[in-house]
Image 1 (cartoon, rainbow, N blue to C red):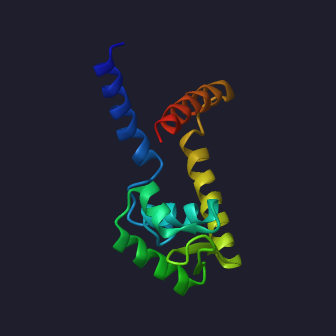
Image 2: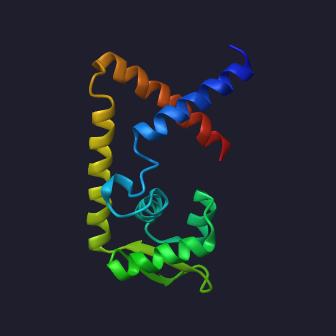
Length: 144
């Protein structure tokens, strides 16, 4: 398979995978959050004490959108801000207990979506899919 065919296959995969995982739904996994908001909350949970600047950079987000999302998370009681110990000009974000519960809820809903999407797959097929996705991950992570 040539490079062009590989790129076309990847694009076809994305067009199939994104709707199958319900990533285009107006409300991510029926949570009342957008996919980008959910990704933001998950990033905060992954790196408690992460700066908004780092999240914006990693997710390629508009800083204004991120600021509004973080303000919403604070009003929901999911996130707290504090000055960075390394750079007082930066604010670091951390999940509250309620935020950790929200992230766990997102993880559980995500698991159910993936399980449903691959419900008809055999264990061997699922293992092949997971291995292929591991290859995708390792290739993309080398690019970061």
